[in-house]
Length: 114
Image 1 (cartoon, rainbow, N blue to C red):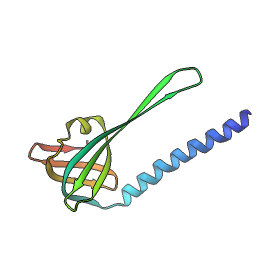
Image 2: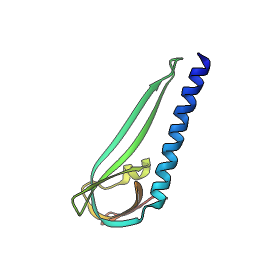
Image 3: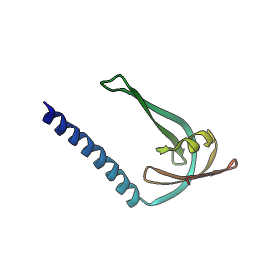
Image 4: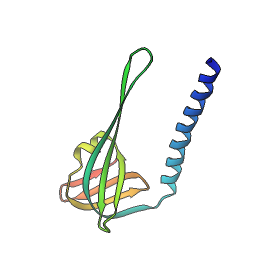
């Protein structure tokens, strides 16, 4: 039973590492794009897990969904500072690379990933 758990654990960890590396490579190979956009939604995805000992852990992924001037939408993962300070429903220039937020410039100022 212990070896089955070990194999499953290694597969899950391997998949997570593979997913992170794949997303990083995809973002690195994507062009940096600056376009007119408006922040249409802020989303917070909160995951709560309880382990076998009853310890509870939570993780939160923050997303900004921008409507581009072409009418399409893009969903970007951001940190808490960007999430809190992003002006909603304000048009400006969004700069991004793949799924990576770089900056948003509007009449409220410049919001930039540090």
